[in-house]
Length: 601
Image (cartoon, rainbow, N blue to C red; front, side):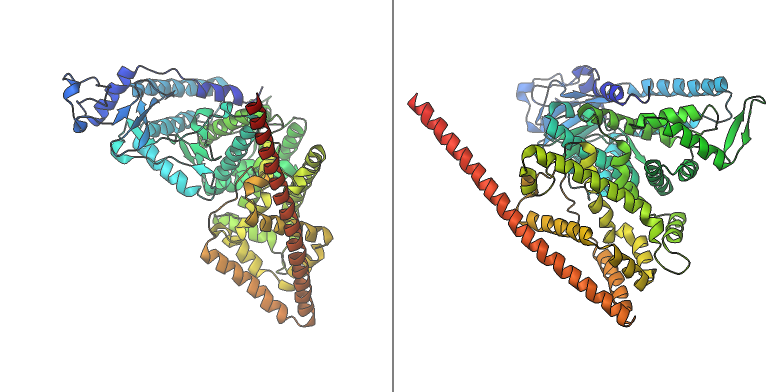
């Protein structure tokens, strides 16, 4: 049946609260506070006359008497500090440490018994250690506050991610105080907002796993809110997982190879992800032992099993691995526990509002980006060997796979956009293009050019910039010019016109479901990109008549695109402004007629 993401999400979002009396006792013990907690909330240790208390006698200016939310480790009360901050105060469940230690002990014993039952020579207890380490960190709310600050810093390039401000003066190991953030859970939103919510949440998860390596490992519905302005508010950072750069590169390669059905590459990814031993092993049923086998055998099995599976969601891949484990030896590295749980939960949430959601395609833009931006020495070497051939030329044929994937995504978006415009009578086209995406996957893949293209000026794009600078200029520019046909130029005109239009008309009026990144490009990276351009410019000048002819072609194409995009942007903007004006006039007339009819009655 696969990974029950929907059921897991529901389980995580429904937790019975514990008594406020116990919560206040834990709070006062943590602060070593023997006075009243807040007006009307005397606390467990205050025995005096509250009417004689002054401001200095209270810990909080106000605090709710009942929790507004409850989770497995604690529950939240709404309050206000004496500094005037409206806050959420999370108090840990009393004696939770004992319960968790018992759970971890039972889990460890169960894994030992499972190893004996399976007759496996793989030590499974590190799984319990990984889970225990994560939960142990969750018990220290000061660590959670530190995790939140790091998460906000690492993901500042996604402007729709909001992290509450944590107030250290009111935070201890067992009590966490943060600013109060307004927002709704996924199930409280209309369908269009649910799609926007999940598009942003899934894009953020792809960025976490494949770009930053800092994963919010507890993304259930109760831990993410949809703010009135469309931001996603992450409110629980007790469980955060760090992914090693080499694993991120392996994950990215795995997503690409799975979608392109490159089973030989996918087999190598399994080894790089530490899901199989360095030496592939196959079960000899007659001898009852594992024996070495070649990667070709494993590749054949992968292709056969996955090709015959539906592969509609993340859980289907888990089922395929379970089937292959009957014949081939697999490992279960500790990191998989939290990551499988994370993405199964997100997939379960996405399925609630979009039955067509595809996790693999949604992660593809960030997978391509990570593949072009390795950070390990091995990854940089592999990328250079892939993209620069023996003649020193840029090997476009080795990059064609990623280009084809981008082309397929773009064609699918254009087809969906055409269908949407046919349904709305062309209004979507007048409003700036494809209009609002109707499913989560398209909302993310529609940003693929921006996600991948931003590497040009991003610090992590240094490797690809260096490779582009080393490539032979005449061969590189000649190939690019050969590909810039009328269709490519038309797309460039559309993109530039859309960008110009957004300078005049707000993206909200154009049906943009995801805000564009506002993170400023690195000045150093921009200078490095300019260095790449100038190197090839100088090389063309020194290449003689052939190079000068190429420069002339580039200039003519650039002028044509600039002129046509300016005309198109002006026309589209005029249409949008006319549409908005007529809409406002119609609303005003309707309001006037309603007022008149109401007055007459």
